[in-house]
Length: 85
Image (cartoon, rainbow, N blue to C red; front, side):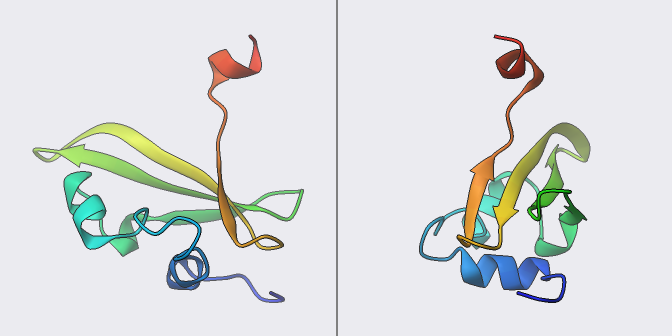
């Protein structure tokens, strides 16, 4: 994919490998919409996608995944305690 994908492109491309990630029920559960997601291109060619998890109007966490445009898969983002283990 030559140009920067949109979040809608990523949802379409990952619909088979991660069918529930962008599902309406999943997004609603976490208080998110497709427009909640922001994307940041990484040096290795992947895109970091993030969105706040909301509950009662307050942020209670953050959804983070890497989108790999070579495999069209979403990869977990390691937490800092996993990096140091």
